[in-house]
Length: 331
Image 1 (cartoon, helix red, strand yellow):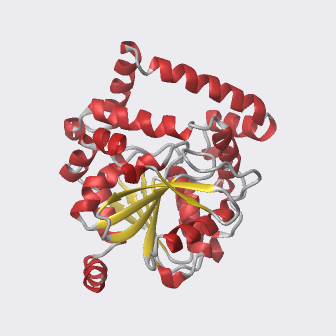
Image 2 (cartoon, helix red, strand yellow; image 1 turned 90 degrees about the vertical axis):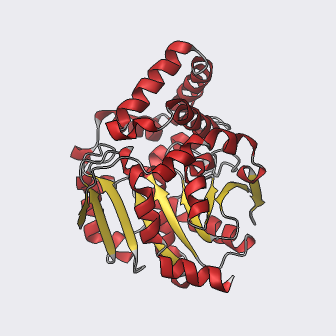
């Protein structure tokens, strides 16, 4: 376990990336690509950064969509990274998959990288995308994975329900025992939210909330742009309704389908804030202790949202300079 601390705020590169996000996700055709999978489903994905750069697959949070990857666009261009951000089943452009499991996902990713003729890549899971990054570390051919990272990832409930908030427990119960009712509630909530998002009181409230998530040094980030990015990626998550969110609320809070001890990939890195409440660091320590080859970076004072301020360091560790230079030289 390593502890990270820093006195500065969000990097300038990330600020620039977030400041250009609105026009990026609104206009670029590469942000709404699709792949027909062998079972007939559609997999939606977006691409950001340098199209000829080293491939990094980014797995979005919960509930979210491929548009979450837009925050990496500017920085990925600077660092010669090609970010591919897929929608999970039922989110955005991807077909809903009844009865799916977390361990089904590596097969979708295998088809995606094969179709894009990507032979070597890293995966990075953000928040609810973390378990899917681990599933890939468990199941994908190790010779094709150059690195596996998790940033502010979901925690396993087996670590102890005492660490789980009451709200999350209630959501899991509703998703497990009353999925139809929860889906109806979600659909209604999203409909109202779409309307409310255009009103001044709602935008002021959301702007205030976003500002509270950042430190004083991070206030240079354009709040309006952050708000629009967040609304776009969340509303895209509900483009097909709330079924995927209800399904994933069950998947993330039950057995993930593999033992941590069986994830033998030799380079798993986790970055998590010591003040993150969703989930608390105790759940992540439980997981890291059981992963055979895991380095846990505990970010001093970090929360679920401020950890993103370390993205430059995270990308540098996931794709070291020598690996990047070797890939670009061979391309």
